[in-house]
Length: 252
Image 1 (tube, helix red, strand yellow):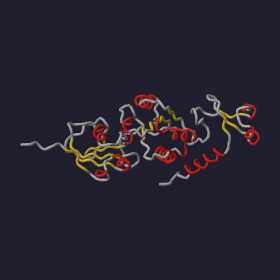
Image 2 (cartoon, rainbow, N blue to C red):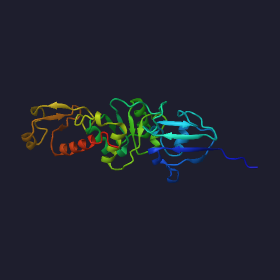
Image 3 (cartoon, helix red, strand yellow):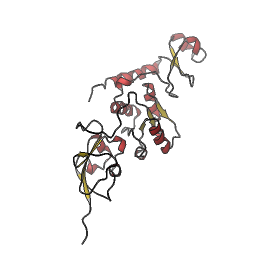
Image 4 (cartoon, helix red, strand yellow):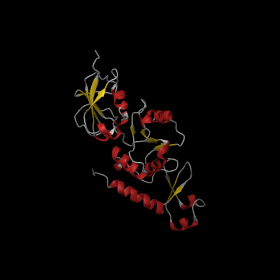
């Protein structure tokens, strides 16, 4: 006689449903259990990467990622800020000033983050293992649209931008990490990530167009790559984006 197959019931909440097959979104569903997997392995086998998970309850009791799930269990999985019940959280506490590392596909997003004043690392040749290691060793949020990278065990902080549009990705990240009050616009080099310093016109002479020198008297420069910044039309467009982000404060 064939033995009944071991099952658990699962329920994912909020934004974690983005990673599920459509038939499993916003509802409780049965899942065949292979052995007694850890909470992390069980969740990630269904789609969501563990850095997007904040609370897991197994039969109503908070569980961490190493907890072994037994047949017959009911597992509820929550993203950040959805389960207000007191108890342990799986996400590390938010840093005072979050730092980031981004994968190769987010090169435009990194420029936006630096423009807002955030320390954001990016290279076009970062390997997956390098991204995960840097995220872990330097306590940086890993931003990636490669779910496999986010599922690496050493990654503690991470987020998968849903949009493919860089400006909308920025809105997502600002909302997810509450960055509005932490922004320091135009304080960091968008090209190389170094903090900017003030510069007198005499210091940047010969490195800016003549018409710019005639119209502007306030400059910033990067001490690393020597790039010079001033409040031109590009600055005005970026200021409009900053103003839009500040309007997000308190919005749903």
